[in-house]
Image (cartoon, rainbow, N blue to C red; front, side, top):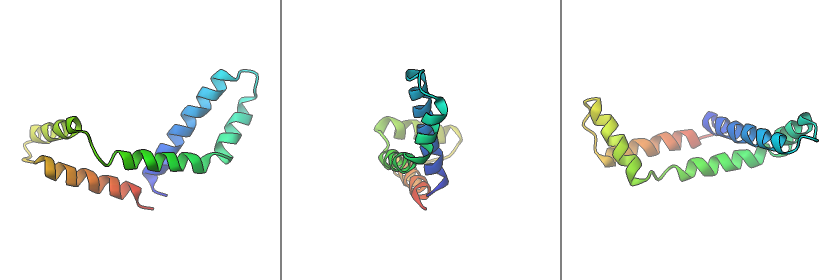
Length: 96
């Protein structure tokens, strides 16, 4: 699993742990943490992979913002070139 997928999975898991702890004050937080760490790790990795895959197609607004940002750095980049770079970054993050 890639470093980016691991980071995303941990962030999702940690957010859920906090959510469940806040809503279950009568349950020992360590029990919730243990369940999330052991039983659901594969699920969070799958969710992270799906989220990253969904990001592979940026919205038109994202492309425009990216092109504008690149041009502000005196780089002449087209939307097509930015999309190629974006996809290369996502592909690299998806590698195991």
